[in-house]
Structures are given as structure tokens and as C-alpha cells.
Image 1 (spheres, rainbow, N blue to C red):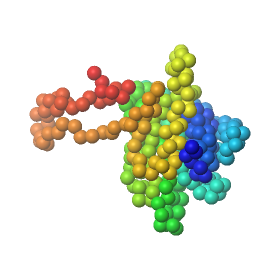
Image 2 (image 1 turned 45 degrees about the horizontal axis):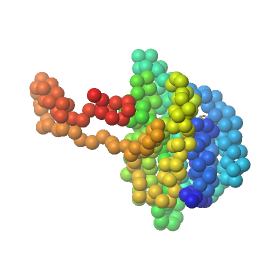
Image 3 (image 1 turned 180 degrees about the vertical axis):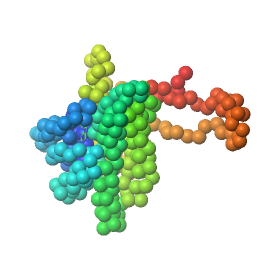
Image 4 (image 1 turned 90 degrees about the vertical axis):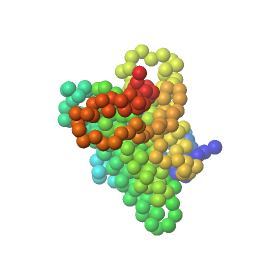
Length: 298
Ligand SMILES: NC(=O)c1ccc[n+]([C@@H]2O[C@H](COP(=O)([O-])OP(=O)(O)OC[C@H]3O[C@@H](n4cnc5c(N)ncnc54)[C@H](O)[C@@H]3O)[C@@H](O)[C@H]2O)c1
């Protein structure tokens, strides 16, 4: 069964890795796809139209419909052009998959301003800017028809942001921001008929290839395409009732993430010197923060 017949979808960073797999699967489900990719290095330098063009060729070879777009999603005008590309080519936009990303890992003791700015810009502004321009399109459509637009935003976060990964303060902070942005957008956009969810993917790509020796089983579990069925379903009209959720796609499982919630509470205390004992008592009663695997630290 084809889930996205006739829908128009943008996938950012779709020239390789996880985004490429999303674009291929959306096209296989009948979506017309804007394959966006700047063609940057892992660190975000340079540009190259070849990866996006190759994905478009492959989709067309498989009988699908796609066009390439080389705009930088973290550039305001670039993001505007990207959304306009979808509207001009296919007459509208139904699905925005924000996936583009870069890495500049460094421990905080040595992280430079450039390393911080570049990573936060691509992940956080590179999610916000396409969203903002897509929302303009959907708001105009909603105004015209008075009907819910049945549109989708699917963002990409990471366990680095959800659980906290040392050496990735820039990346993790941006990805935690993407998770918050997803929840806020879901609350704001429901009235237009736009849902906003996020995935936290897992895949063997150039982003993760430095993780050491990989067994055939790990390679199978790390196939980027394992992340795409959830995206294809979220992109479909069937998912209208699901919004503001984050799906962690792990190594052989999918988990619905649960967010921050109030823990043990106490009445305000004016005397700061008395707080130590009270805070320790309540911390002892609180659930622990999650560790790198997503379960509470021992
Ligand atoms: N691979 C994983 O296990 C994993 C885990 C958690 C999160 N993620 C996230 O998944 C997404 C995809 O990661 P991947 O592993 O496929 O990486 P990747 O490096 O293989 O692909 C990312 C793509 O984004 C493109 N890109 C970078 N900056 C861009 C920009 N400004 N505008 C347009 N395109 C740009 C790159 O050219 C590249 O093709 C990223 O957001 C990443 O943070 C990946």
C-alpha cells in the first residue's frame, strides 16, 4: 500500500545517509520529492550538487518523481527558495522533513566559537527556517480554503540532545533545541492542520563511521533505511492525530520518547543555607537523569 500518493515532500540533507533513505522511501510511497542537499563535508564546508542529483536519478530510475535542490537550509533566503521550489514545481507542499546536519565535535574546554555557531546554525536554524517558510505556505492555504491543510513537519533530533553526549555540546544543545521546537510547533500549528513530530535516528553513515569495527549484524541494524518507515507513515495523511511526539529509532527498536515532567517538590525556602539538606532529600526521591542509553543512570 502506497502511503503518500501525490503528496509533495521536501527532505533536507537528502543527498546521503538517513535523508537519502527517507527520500527514496517517500518516493516509493508515491510522494513527489524535493531532494535538498548542499553537498557539504561532514563539518559543513563547501558544496557539491552531485549527491542530491544522484538521489534524484535513482528515484526516477525506480519510477518515482523528484527534483534536486542545492540550497543551504540554514540560510533564511535559501530556506525560502527551497519551499518555493516545491510550490513552483509541484504546486504545493505537504511534508517537510528536516534532516540536514553537520558535526564539529569537541570537548567544551576547547570548543571554539566557530564550532559552536556552525553546528547550532545548521541544526537549529536549519530546522526553524524551512519550517517558518513552509508555515507561510500552509497558513495561506488554510486561509484560502478554511480547511485543515493536513501537512507534516518531521524533524530530526538525536540521543545526544535527549540524553547528553560528552564532546557534543554544540550538537546536543542544538538537537535538544530541535526537540523543544518540535513540541512548541505541535502546540501552535494544530489549528492549521499541521502536525510536528521528530525522530531520533540511528544509522551507519559518515556521521557515525568512526565508531570502530562494525559487524555484519550491526551493519544490518544500522541501515539508514531502517529510520524511514516511521517517517513515511508520519508523512501520510493517516497520522493526523499524532503530534508533538519524538520517536527514537534505535539499533533494532523504535521507542516513543517520554519528556521532562515534574518530580518531587517542596515549598520555597528563603534561607539558602537551609536548602542543601532539603534538595538532597528530594533528589534522593527523584528519578535519576537518563544516561547515554536512555535509561536512568545508576
Ligand atoms: N547517523 C546517525 O546515527 C544519527 C544519529 C542521530 C541523529 N542523526 C541526525 O540525522 C541527520 C542525518 O544524518 P546522517 O547520519 O545521514 O549524516 P550525513 O552526513 O550522511 O548526511 C547529512 C547531509 O546533510 C547535508 N547538509 C549539511 N548541511 C546542510 C545545509 N546547511 N543545507 C542542506 N544540506 C546540508 C550534507 O551535505 C549531508 O549530505 C542529521 O540531522 C543527524 O544529526 C544521525
